[in-house]
Image (cartoon, rainbow, N blue to C red; front, side):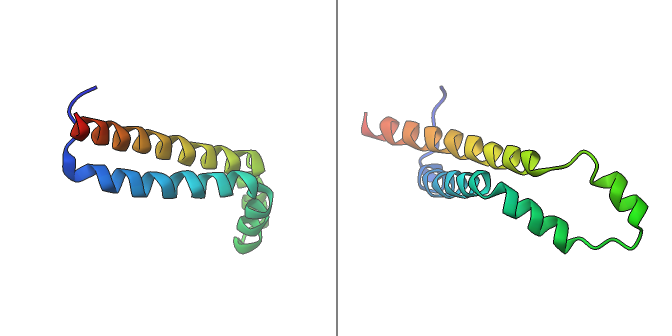
Length: 88
């Protein structure tokens, strides 16, 4: 692991915590988030809408939330690596 710039430690810790928290919330409430997304998107062409929504579902909303958790975890690791680098 390379040297971590000391000016990025605090932003990594703050944004990493937020990304993990939001990602967990998205994973937990993926069904209601998906229903909300579908309800708010009112396309003018019904056939096009059916084709677009064919491969989508709550699973992919949860998958995006899991990606947010992963990004947040990486940011937290880099933040704590920078803290340990400052301590030594």
